Length: 390
Image (tube, rainbow, N blue to C red):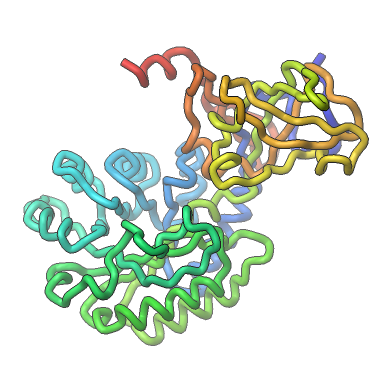
């Protein structure tokens, strides 16, 4: 029988009801986030979109679409997914579009943001010829960095994302109806307030002739310490200065923040200057942000090394030498077959997984709000791996 690495009371659902490995999204936690986002919409007058690049588990969209007005996509396939499974508004932005991709995007997009005036001029006639009415805008770079990591800073020197004020002329906006800036990453509303000030100083002269402004993503609205009141005030103050403008926010992470888990199992325990537990999951294939950000995910019932009696290094099953999740301590020794549960594994996980080494993707599950029953939504097998390659 499967054993559990920490007392079963620590788990908010029956981990034995899940395949292993599996992503598990808790509908009750998801609704909690959505209710807060819905209140922000009501109180601020802004319209909030789900950024599919962060969370695209479309099985949950009947729930998410009760609160949010649509989706934002990074290309043709996300645009189609949003249109076909979510509905509502479909906003699309890419650093550059190809002609074949644009033909597809125009079937689904309601709002379309270009990265440069050159791209807008290149596709302007194509957009005009589209049978659907599409409101077009330009992504701009306010050149105001508030983050600490250049990898995640669209305003870093040399950024390819967005047009700087110095490179923009009034004629470049001919035919456009909106401006779009995205400058934040997992940040609070004070960062938005500062960035918005820079945006208005650099681009305010163009706002009178527009219909909408998109404040982008990176707003960690559902984080416990996020200043929601400040966010609402910042948006309302902006709208009071520009009452003709529709304001959009497009968080991806805030929708699914702290709503999901990754359940996995201990396959083996080896020794090399300490015990190493080999899991049936992988940092590089199943939780790549652990290596890319990097960051340390939490484990239910686990602690930092030395804080509990038994410390293990947790590693994945790929051949990458650095496929290591981290060092964790537990109350009792781990045993083969134990289930471990990583937290906050809904956003930027399922959307970024790979089948490197032929490692199968984790199953996808949901926890019912009322019954707390775990339901498996999707499993993956050989065909999912093989069809990607030929």
